[in-house]
Image (tube, rainbow, N blue to C red; front, side):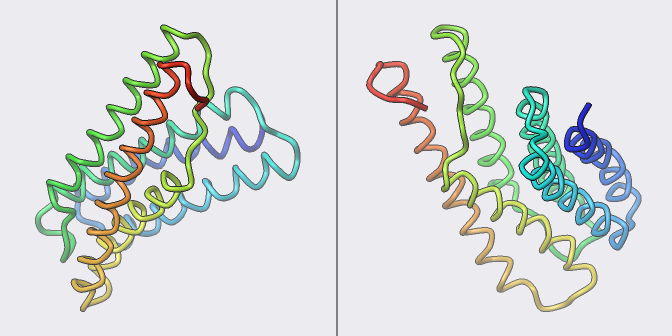
Length: 184
């Protein structure tokens, strides 16, 4: 159990804490936990690369931790009504989760039919993750800072565009793998 993996597990442990804080209406604590979770993501990657702590377990847990945090944050910040001045639109949450379900299903299908394949994230996928995280961060910040609606609207549209674009890119990548004309 490397230090990087321990940080990833800590990020996973932050998820229920974050959800409880949203449910009980503690916006500052929500923001603090979300930022702390983000810092563990940065730190685990830095430690893994710097100290050669890359592991198979880390390759599995890191994206799971990221998705747990993002999906649970999207759902919680879509359904909450009173804690934050802004809410993630339901249509964005459905689009983001649908994309993730399709990617997971496609990746699993490829793995089961063709054997082990690596699916490294694309640059568009990474940018989409940043935009989705920025969406969550802006909602969390809205309880402390006024006047974020215009910025939030731009972030939401950018997150939607990234989610759709990266979903289509990953689908095309999956089709190339299945047809035998390309790599992941």
